[in-house]
Length: 328
Ligand SMILES: Cc1ncc(COP(=O)(O)O)c(C=O)c1O
Image 1 (cartoon, rainbow, N blue to C red):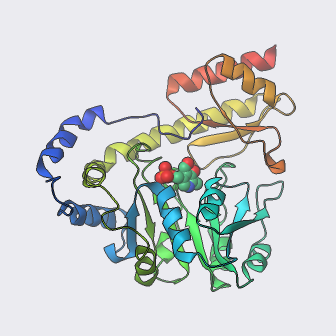
Image 2 (image 1 turned 120 degrees about the vertical axis):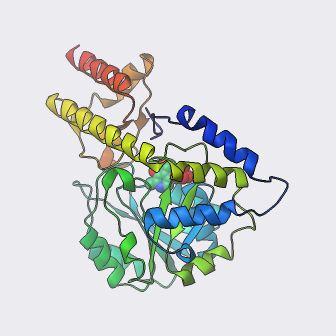
């Protein structure tokens, strides 16, 4: 329960369709019409033209490409903190640095402070992860739009958990030339191991980003599988409804325990604290076969851990063990 994976795995149900498509795609070729079909279905799903989309091997790879396209001597990106850890890893991998605006005790931030940190000429990109990982909260769309409207710097909104939140800024891509959206199939479409993610922005930005993407970067196997997933998207979207119910169940049960404080989540995980007992609880769960993610490195999340919403029986066991620990 520690990597924010989707536990509901509909792959066995789709086995025949996966097998079928593997017989249809000629893997001796670099290029096949499956690419066009995938682009069409993705365009339909997110309701935006194919020239606004760049696809790759997971959101992480798209971050890497985006940073590569923006890299310049002494340049940096701006992120909130705590937020997705790998903004720092991939920006430093391409030679950029990463600066942070730290969240307040309500896991929020002031738009004007973000705008101020964006100002220096060496700042190439501001990132807002929404909903935010690892806090799980959702920033107000108005706040992000205010930032986008008051800067000419590029703003990346990482919507890795969009389907669990239901809120998106994707509709604003045509309105704001400095807006880029990041999405992944890893969470909502239960495909962490498939590696499929995409960026959405206006065609000019997409053209710039594509200049650093290698030719045929996305294997035909991944494309074929992503196509089957989109053809069957209702199964996956229904599973999200189930996971959201489970998330609310865990949240309400954790809230009822006096010594536990969960943060309201719009994702497939819940971050919570058991005060100064958190680290012992973490170990107790570990010895009982339940792995959580320690997210207590940032002062705002001192004594916090993150649990991924899982299958009903695992969630029940997790809650039972938490209660057991608190009562002893
Ligand atoms: C906020 C956020 N962005 C991006 C990613 C990377 O997703 P992918 O598996 O598509 O590389 C993750 C994965 O946990 C994430 O939490």
